[in-house]
Amino acid sequence: MTSEHDEVDRIVEAWGRQRPDLDFSPLEVLSRVDRLSRHLDRARREAFRRSDLEPWEWDVLSALRRAGEPYQLSPKQLLQQTLVSSGTMTNRIDRLVGRRLVRREADPGDGRSILVTLTEEGRTRVDAAITRLVDAEALLLGVLSRSDSDRLAGLLRKLSLSFDT
Image (cartoon, rainbow, N blue to C red; front, side, top):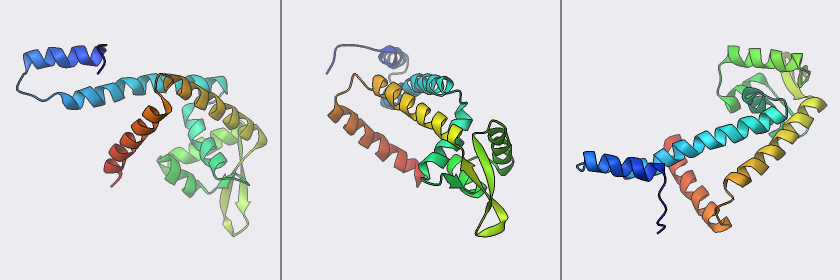
């Protein structure tokens, strides 16, 4: 056990003195997750900014890039992956088309439908952003050994899955 104390330790200790009847162990975990989330958010925003992307643009472009060649999905598939409303997705696609990061194409399997396709410029930007993102996140985790990082990932996965059921 380390003798170092962080801000969460100080908060929990202060609450423990004021309310010794409560178990503050959940705060020891989730307050740290919350604080780390803020650092992660800043690192992500910077990685996206350096690639001239907004976070919402990253969501759409990365979904298309992960789809693999030919880097296209239907608007419905994009909705499922980004968890936004239909109207919001239409607006996002319009804006990305305007920036020439995606294009709309007729779906050859259904003439009434369209597919959203990542352009070469969109691919260049999303590839640069993922490289910057992975580098930034590796720096954030740099104080952990690989085994500590793997163990933490497993524990967070276990916790995350409990919310997904």
